[in-house]
Amino acid sequence: MTLLSREINRQIGVIIDRRGEILFVIVGDTQGILIPELSDYPTAGGRLRGLRLVHTHLKDEPLTNDDLTDLALLRLDAVAALGVLPDGFPGRIYLAHLLPPNPAGHPWMLIPPMPFHQLDVDAEEFVTALEDEMTRAQSETFDIKDKREKAMLVSVMPKASKAAQEEAMEELRELAESADVIVLDIVKQRPDRINPRTLMGEGRLKDVIISAL
Image (cartoon, rainbow, N blue to C red; front, side):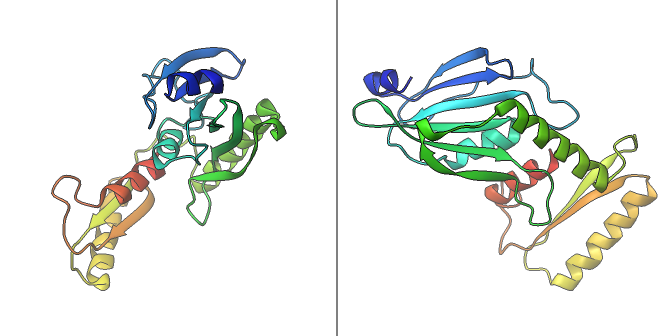
């Protein structure tokens, strides 16, 4: 794959299922690839989709923000980038996977890059353990059998005082709970100004979407 990627000077990617079958082959440009619609491969209980993405990076560079966003939003088992050396052979491999809910709020883990031929991971065992941990962490957050509506409360109040925002969000939380809605998380931002398209900054909005998955 790296040889072909160097020959055509484009990134090449494959979407692979847990049986090791290649479901999609993607040819992008020098900067990235466009992942196809994956609605035929739903996630199970908010965990993982059962697919992993492996693609080339022409300059042997680390995973990009777009790569990591795809990992999180699509709930992929993992995303990997194969560095392409000038002679077309694989260089280092850059790998990331999602994390269960954690106090630090980190959505993913980046594995230190290593030469491609040194990678030795039992993918099936790893993903099974990861999903078990995700289920366990989710059950500690709320009863997964509880069918009540669940919500994340978001407040964007430019130039508001911290106390005023805290008071407003406490009122909103009480309203939600009185309507029998389970509040999973509260996100507050006090920007200097409102983004006219997204209210909060696009980076922060992306974080909220990832946390809500």
